[in-house]
Length: 178
Image (cartoon, rainbow, N blue to C red; front, side):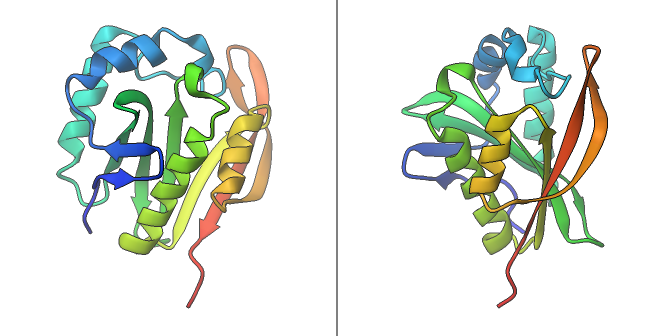
């Protein structure tokens, strides 16, 4: 296992977090309520939380199954991606990602998620990738589908965010058997 390594796509650089990322993450994610609209949590909500989140992610790079990337486009931080909660018994891991609002609709999330799925399955040998999103989050549904994840179940009203109930959609990617 290599953990978080630098990944490059046609337009993006996915790299390890750096302490100096905290300022941009707070500005682009912490100060934008739309970023957490369908999750109900924002690890960048305050400057202090943002610094702590970035520091925690950097420390986790020492763990075997810790994956966390800052996403850059043309040298500017535009998002994050990560994989968490590796389950050795199921050989599965959960995927999460976020893209700043100014970069929505440009295919960056799809490009980054595809790179992460490919890396986790082809290089790290993880056979199952899991993800979820709120039923109203059409953008995330498209991103997950483009990356080859399939909708496997829906839990009615499973997400309660700011008094609003959403169905929670669960997705899965299974590495093809050769």
